[in-house]
Length: 456
Length: 109
Image 1 (tube, rainbow over the protein chains, first blue to last red):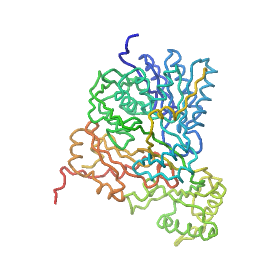
Image 2 (image 1 turned 45 degrees about the horizontal axis):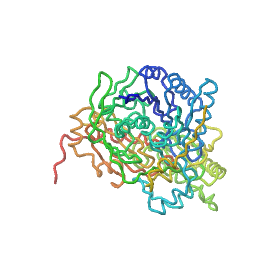
Image 3 (image 1 turned 90 degrees about the horizontal axis):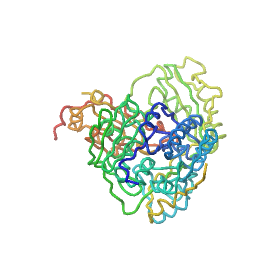
Image 4 (image 1 turned 180 degrees about the vertical axis):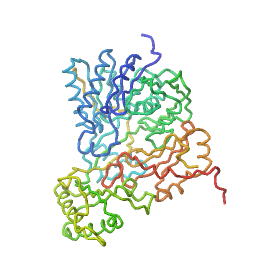
């Protein structure tokens, strides 16, 4: 077989389960792709999903998207690589995606070799790395301690390209993988076929959010990357979109701290010398991406740490006399609540005032403006859901009846939209682990991510 | 000139759960050059605008290929933790809208 001149990679949308544009997928399939990659996850939606093992996407929408991808890929027998399945990419999320996949395969009569790659990590891997001083904090992230590791209830690491390449090598036609580096999902096929690492990873980084690199930008439309020996081309199958050097460059800085250096498990992608030019009317050609290998590989670990349970009250006021003294109101309600609960101060409160500074908090520069109406979100964090509910119920009674100076109403100061008044919101988590771990052995890039094969 | 009149895109977004990154994508080379020359994108000015200590502004970069000046702020509360206001890091850019971008950098004292 002669060496491939190019490989064509489709990225259908920024997050599998958001709703694929079926017309664009058809157009993309007409462009003879070699592989479909699909990123389904991120830390972007917060730590809850990882911590609770809960799903971020709609099951129905996920089934529709997966069905479209399977139908398209199986018709022409090209591989489908799904990364960060179920968003957080831990075992419950991968199993959820698998269940949907099997359902579709049964209903639509698909048969293929399946590889499932797990990204869950044993806490002892992290404990040992801590003890051996192989853990580094990202900027802004508190230093990792053994206590935080102990408290974590779910732990994953972002796999690079190695597990995907291994699965492709073993004949996988569909890969469902846990938490993955975005670029790895789209770069592995090209690397498996022997293409340049810097170009493959760079192209992966650009197409991982689908048409976010196009004009007009959107994560909800299909993009195609054409990887060649010395360059790559980005093109949007949908004719209403154009990919320009400016739109690509604008996307390269998206959601990252550094505009042209990107850390990958085996080294650093360097886009500082990248060159781009228009390719035809609607596409862009890109070359000169670089890759600097790191002496020891690293993996990014993500772990969710439980913080307690939340109940909240959502209300509003249209009372100008109250709006003038909101801080007095908040402090007064808080004080009364704490006096009543003096025997059990095991909760935290948080107030967000919509219409005043809910979005920016203390960073809001617009002050001394009196809104005519404000929304009040009062939250309680407590060790159990029952306790949070109880405290919120008592707080509601304070808010509705708080006596303030100049009040024209004797009670009912707050308009609450819901019955029940107290809304129980479930567990709250934080990313207690968001750290890089240096691996003593490059083989860990594969060993830490077990692969299971089966015939569907 | 106000910043909003010089940009194609202006937004904030998570760069991981502990950082919020702000992208100022200028609409043409002249605006980008003016933005750079103005010297207004510095830790002190941004910290003052957002009422945060300068240490909270982690980095400021220019990237010519995208005509972008981007800066990144360390969050006070990480994404989705109790008390967070913006899980995606969105909607933090509005204070930049009216930022006056001078034609020239202020003269050095």
